[in-house]
Length: 266
Image (cartoon, rainbow, N blue to C red):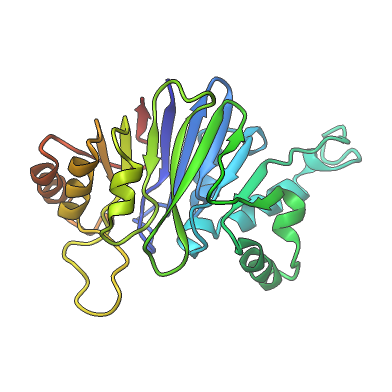
């Protein structure tokens, strides 16, 4: 089975005591973090040791999905146990943890800009083994493999399909952030679990759309034939029961709403 722990599910402003987008995916000893928005690093530490994470995959370069790469990078760079000499009771190591970091195309420039705000352009790149993924190719981290599909948002954004290497076993699809689109429906076809954004109580009133309503999320799940639907990227200021009811009506079956600390097994 694949185990998903919701570390943060808020939209661009955190719930009270909450965090933005971050999901820990575990399978046969492999640990992958999908997105690392503001507040996620502290939440991650409540569940696993950050040096034991094998890889981080970023869906798009918006702060609520990537900002906590900064504290994560600081920990990997300056934590006593990561140093080559004895510090603070730690013996020193010549093999500090360096998780892989898979950024979307052109994401490197943005993390350098973020690093500059803390005075070190290469902070993130030097802390992780960082590279930009090719959206047309599959990547693997340990026992998990990820595929990508671009979805419409305000910046280049990629839904992520996660399943065990080899293609057998359960399949998770994470929508990232998106406006209504057919690409996600096709990409999530027959997913065991569709973790889908449902930011809005109603469609945007003007301008370019960038997010889904709960009803639209339910409709996407139904058209994809997803076996299980979990709403995320949703504020605690919305009526959660009403959101679940609206999504379920369109989905044709009960849906779940992500909460921090929720563990999903597929």
